Figure 1 (cartoon, rainbow, N blue to C red):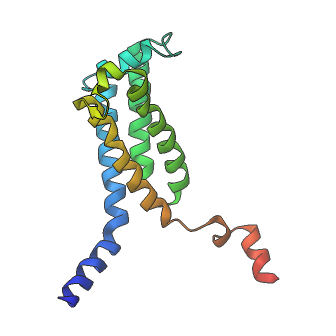
Figure 2: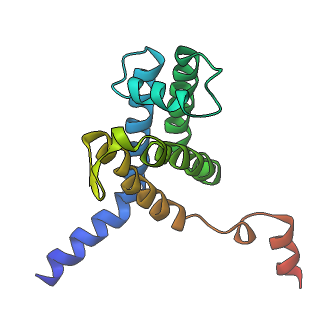
Figure 3: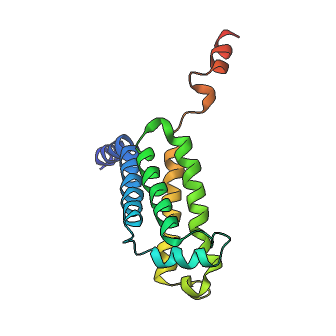
Length: 157
């Protein structure tokens, strides 16, 4: 049993980062493409959010294409190991903005306190993506350990 446990854990440690990157790519690229082609189920939610924010001057179709492009690009850069920091920053911005409907559109996202609608659940699942991004980012080498000027100076000292 211990040998099996070891093999399973070793397998997951070996492939977890690659699978997480692919999952990010798959979700963000696919959902982004749906927005670009104006066939996303999130379209009405985005339109409602635009109406109640300072972005109401942007045509909904233009915003949807921009958001879709942003999401698709986020998916692509998630595949590139050296771009974790950029991915994490962009993802943080995306997560912050996608949580807005929970507060700005409670009639769409909540049946009652602590009972989300299907739309609310769709938004809240982003916490799982955020948690997965934390795990990915936890494996990034600190800048001080990479090939920086400071690292070279530390070796000389």
